[in-house]
Length: 281
Image (cartoon, rainbow, N blue to C red; front, side):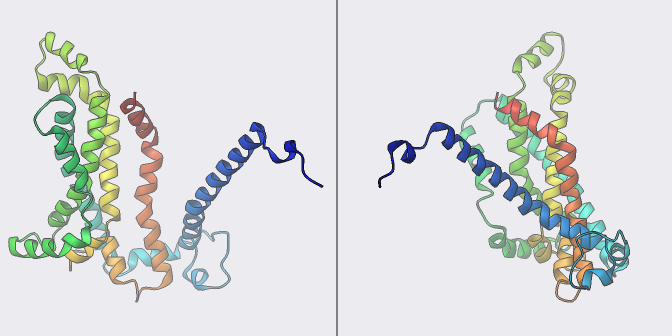
């Protein structure tokens, strides 16, 4: 007995339903892929050291601060945390101080090699950091900034500058130049027109770019592990003590590391959406 043609050929409604099911299943899978590990990290961070090392694991946190207290009192952890904050803050300031003027120049001026310059900015991300770590370590030892917060911030700034340049370029491109020209006709110089007209409009996007640079530096581990010995950041310190540190210290350290990224996502998400909406208009 053969099937009829109507049984074999799928209708557009069936195809649409199948596509919607795959879309929803993909969204659920991706959300679970991200949220489930974060939830287990939160459970073990807010549980006592005994509960963290016990088996089977509980799916509900005890809301015990014993693991965080152990983390805070662990030898050298506060110094490493201070170094991470310092390096990330320096990276944030330097990346915006260099990237924002470059983004403004790319959006407002025409000059020979402009397209090549944008391509070279992207190509800086094509070189893996492990390939550059050894030459950088040798150069820093010879010139002096080895094992310092400023030296490590220089390396992290090179990682963050491409993003800062491209993001600020998109921001400036979304603001009509006629606004600046109108300010010029009213007596403003290019600098005052920028500070009074353009800068207030792009300030949310600049803030998002700065926090993004902070998160890049905060989470970077390879350069911090290679270029520092005594003044290690939190990521390098945890990596150094990964084999010897207890399990509850690892969970507490991992939770502390993801906090800035979570703050970044929830605090500036509307600015990021508005920024890309302006850039694509």
